[in-house]
Length: 61
Image (cartoon, rainbow, N blue to C red):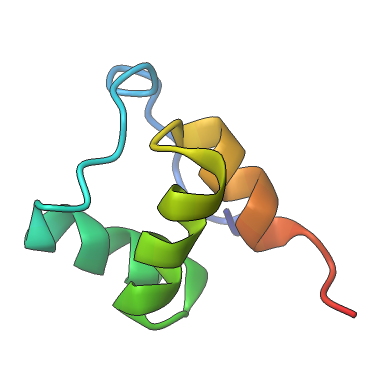
């Protein structure tokens, strides 16, 4: 998440739904990645929003 983005905690506990195209697109835009990257992240760490966010922010070698 970029520092200038407002953060909402109301749906923080809800898992990411990779079948929900709008939600996948929203996260892809938020992290400036392809929607497939969001789907792959969910396959790697599960649909937990915090886990996906941490994976997307991790430095890549």
